[in-house]
Amino acid sequence: MLLFVGFYCYIYQQVQADVLGDCSITTPLFFGSNSSDVLKLQKILNKDPDTAIQGNGAGSKGRETTYFGQLTKQAVMSFQQKYSSDILVPAGINMPSGYVGAFSLNKLAYVCQNHDDTAISQMSATNIIDIYETDRKIQLVQAQANSAVNQSFISHTVPQLDFSSFTTQIGSLLISGLSINSGLPGTKVYINGQGFEKTNIVYIGNENVTYPIDSKVSGSYVYFTVPSIPQGRYDVAVKNSKGVSNTIFFIVKGEIEVAPVINRIEPSSVRYGQAITIYGKGFTPAGNEVYTNFGTEKGVISPDGTSLTITIKPASMEAASSAGNGNKEFYVQVGVINSNGYTTTPAMFIFQI
Image 1 (cartoon, rainbow, N blue to C red):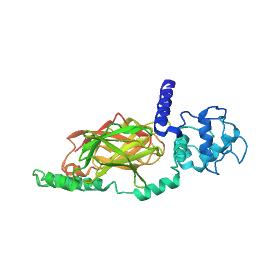
Image 2 (spheres, helix red, strand yellow; image 1 turned 90 degrees about the horizontal axis):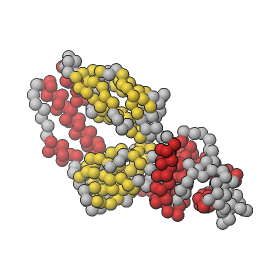
Image 3 (cartoon, rainbow, N blue to C red; image 1 turned 135 degrees about the vertical axis):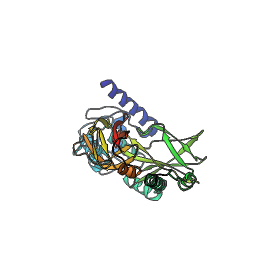
Image 4 (cartoon, rainbow, N blue to C red; image 1 turned 30 degrees about the horizontal axis):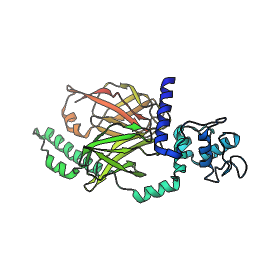
């Protein structure tokens, strides 16, 4: 475990240094630290009167030092309190500590590069696009296909699926996958898909905020670098002259977190309309996404962090389940996505029709 933590911190430091240049602080800082990174820290804190070391004397603006003393610790605590939603909340703590860890380093980088909260909000507001336009089209096509499949069970005929119509509705710009689905700011991510052009814009965001990112083309791939944005679960989309692609999830990592792990599912066999409970760890109080072969259920809560409950009601199986007697069984994969990460080993249960 210690080796893993050390390796994680080393990777984090290298990523920060490569991405942030002169604004980079390559190591966590705390009371008693004495290094050039402390000098950078004090200069960043002194940019804002709310977080300045002091009005005059050692550590004040223009007289920054390399020593992390009590005044610097107090200034760091003021900084952490001011940006608590980006530092304290993601870390799961209520009070500032004065310790400069990953969340504090991310926010300090923002301030150093003039990416404060106001600048971010203005950027997002002027660049917000509907990255879910194609997702809604795909949901509509899925509904049409589900309706055709259900009708075929009722009429005992072969489903009439117009695939050419489906393709026309969805469009030609589509993402099929990412090289990785989680990473620290500064990580390079390759997007696989179709419909990419020489000039593409990658967007990473959610229903509330969207960040445009510069991207480059490499053969049949588009790639981008994860920006320094708060830790959490986001959606990635590509935009060019063809329109906007579908989205695919990406987890921006911060402090070492516990990714979701599924230990077991109870009951192990269910029919249409019955519930399953997923037991494991790494589940967040809200915002969990449970995905199966049938689709994804979003916004699943986990008050205890160790269990999730969903009802199995796949639209494509409604008619078949009504007509069936439970003699046919299918294995269904289950996984979980949340702001901590995603399950790397899906679990399974049996669906009976």
